[in-house]
Length: 85
Image (cartoon, rainbow, N blue to C red; front, side, top):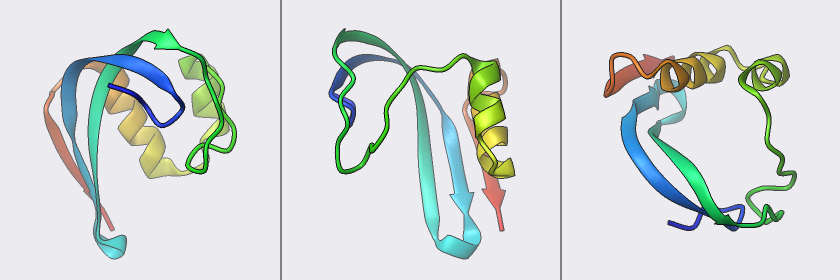
């Protein structure tokens, strides 16, 4: 599967769904690993870079997004369904 940053990934598993009720948005979360390609910026991805979990958590200011990332990373209780206001 080609990711929007032009990386080809192998999907490992389905993690879950999160819903942002106030914005009418559903996010479907998958885990994968890069198999080939080179990171490239696109209209959807203005800046692309790899980060460790610790670095990513320091950069993410949105509390709900941090929670989603940790649920995916911990790989416990999958598939999950969480909602945010």
